[in-house]
Length: 349
Image (cartoon, rainbow, N blue to C red):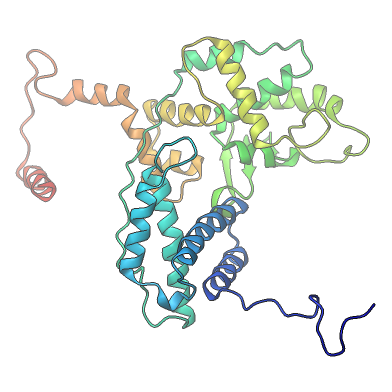
């Protein structure tokens, strides 16, 4: 039987008006997508801003105009005291990232004219300690990892080629997964990396030994991994079912071989990236060249490797410090150099 005349069914009832703050967040996420933000960035922004929206909703704050600086400082305190499922607090990096997303949202709303003032403009973000790469491999340890690959198995040559490319180029595992056959120029000895971090492309050198393993894999072993469905797939590294390898598979693969090498260290794909950067720095490479290799936009991101390049630092120390060797006398500084050094030290104070 039908309902009473004039009575609307649930399907006819319009949805309740959207939470204005939630709607602004949706628009902001769409804007990030239009700007070309990566899937990872969008996923992080969605999670962090949804957390903030839920926190505001619990306090009956549904409009961006109602958010104030003191309220944002309360949210910052909430993040500081928040505990994860395992009972551990959020890291300073996670707290910083959450507030950066919130600050980006309100900055965008002000530019759009939704807000006259940005409540997050004066929000002081927590300091994030600069983390050093805790573990990296020596050149000998890298060779030990390479040596444990069993070349007689189906995976052997492919896995050795993967390890060699990661070590030679320092590319990220995501970048390795996106690598296509035509991205490697054997004649010029370079590899093109498309859509690296930040959506940037770059071309970097690749060593002769890595090229030899790639060539062996592509010509002698890669065809075995292909199926009828993906025979024309340009992907360089193929997985068990004929599909392009995914980052987690690369991470597990490297971790497995590092464990088998029994060198007393653990790590995955990033371990080879750290090792390449550190060993090149200790070998005398200019840090700006390493910056280009790693695809760092800011030099500060690369300078973290200078802190672990202790071998080179010790060489300089031994050669220049007056007390490093018996009988070593410091050379007299000219007046201009002495003045520059004094100014630099005063500036640090």
